[in-house]
Image 1 (cartoon, chains in turn yellow, red):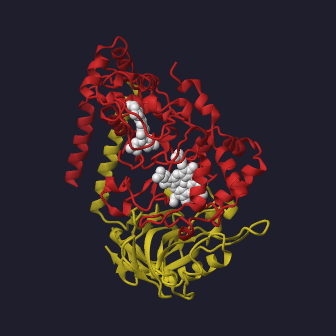
Image 2 (tube, each protein chain N blue to C red):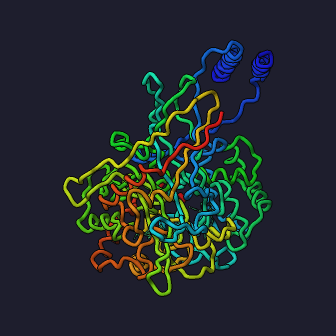
Image 3 (cartoon, chains in turn purple, red):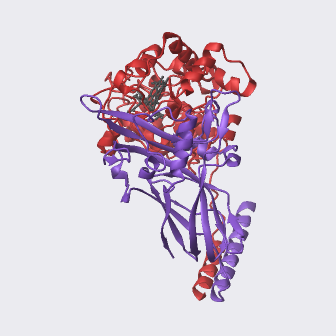
Amino acid sequence: MNISVLTRVSIFSLSLLFLSACQDDDDRVAQEVTPEFIWTQNWDGAPLANADFDVTPLTNANGETLTLSKLVYLISDITFTNAQGESFSAGDYNLVDAREGLGLSFSPDVLIPEGIYTVAFRFGFDDEDNALDYAFLNSADGGWNVPAMLGGGYHFMRMEGKYINTQTIPESEVNFQYHTIRAADPSTTPVTLQDTSFLVNLGQVTIDENTTIEVKMNVAEWFKNPNTWNLYELYTMLMPNFDAQVLMSQNGANGVFSLGTVTD
Amino acid sequence: MKKCLVIGVVLTALWSCQSDDAPAYTATPMPLDIPAFFASSILPPVIPLDNPQSVEGVALGKKLFYDPILSANGTQACADCHLPSNSFTDNRQYSIGSEGDVGTRNSMPLFNIAWNFEQRFFWDGAEATLENQIFEPVVNPTEMNNTWRNVTESLDASPIYPELFSAAFGTTKIDSVGVSKAIAQFLRTLISSNAKFDRHLTDQVPLTPEEQRGLAIFLDESRGDCFHCHGNPNTPLWTDNRFHNNGLDEFFTDRGLGAVTGDPRDDGLFKTPSLRNLAFTAPYMHDGRFNTLEEVIDHYSEGLVYSETISPLMKNVATGGVHLSPEEKSDLKAFLLSLSDQSFIENPVFQNN
């Protein structure tokens, strides 16, 4: 059969490739590598594992006690810039689902020469990326996209949970949805939009073969700085709330993300 | 490096030695007819590598789906609880098995299931693939109450099945795997993509003002906010195929996903059903407790009940919901019905003919 001959030929050439790849190994030339990113989540330093969701009480800066049910977020455009100012980026994205443990490790689709780089990424999508259509994201988490009525594009983060309302007798649990998207004011025509994605600079990292870079998210920071988050006021319907989106973005850009352990 | 060389040579040698003379049987390929909007907006359908769609496989699967031969007493086919006229569910609250036993759950409509990306089937996600799922009803005592041994014997003895199996899989050996593969192939062809709302998106068929207002409520975080679980106009599925507690009960007689995972955090969680074809799929919810869409909408509007595992997406639980006005409720209903696809339930290709 033609097909099997073809397959055989390609396996043969694969084997040849394999051979030459092995040869390269012996006389070490400068290598091109792809670092791996590990996304971890903590609450003021205490790691958040699957078992903490819906269970572990957490206290935010405003003093509310809450539990988290869901934490899913989007990062994009990981960029490596060397001392000469030369940048490398695959321009791709990764969706992290902290509870389900999906997307916790990610290697951007880029090869860079070993060396020292300033590493940065974007939380969410900038307007350019937000304008595109992604079958993967449309299919992820029940549709990661944002309906046109709410400004279109994609969610940046869905953090959901329950906080304890101590002002009722007896105390009661109230659902909150801390969803971040591009700020949109649907009450104007056309909808007023403002890019609320932000750049995170992780600083300098030495990248060799097999480098893994931990990026920590301190979830408590979303409620802290510069805006002390009051869940009694801002717990729901935040997507169409333009000002709330700007406040969330400010908090996000302020100490939520930091460089963790770098290993070779 | 020497090691690599050896591996390379062995690989090449191995391959060259393999003989050509075991021609695997291939039935006539029949790729799914994927609607353009599905192809452009979401991931491709999930089709296992070891069960490609074929003309003969789909034909066999359809025959089996409508044939009571799969039940122990020869009285019940899959289609008795999954009727085409009901978008492949039935109109009973609880399904009734071949021996008259009453189940505890509402039957489920069957369409677009090739796009259930996480492949968790049943109300509680108990089955991990479509092929696996099909093993279950045949031997479930409150459904077809059969044994696979008995099924294969009846099929072997039938005048038609050995030939159909051989056309589909190149073997006259009939087994449960073949049965489940063929039915799965048929079920994957059940694609619904031609509701009024679909034609609104593709051909600009206008929505009525009620439908339009209903859509706005569906997407409005302060009113319906249905879209975080049931999808939105950018994608065609109208479900997230995930599991949530949408506030039906304070205590659970059926633990749903919790009984499957053993995790109390999953108690009372059930699969989000698609909102397509609601016109044909009453009664609603996993236990068929609501007979009408009005009752469903009343539930979300003022009937929400708190329990520990309730989804954080449910709004104003303390007061039962967001309290839609009567106009908002009828607008929401009008929009929901625009997702029903008459041509799907009438499609002659899916019927027993």
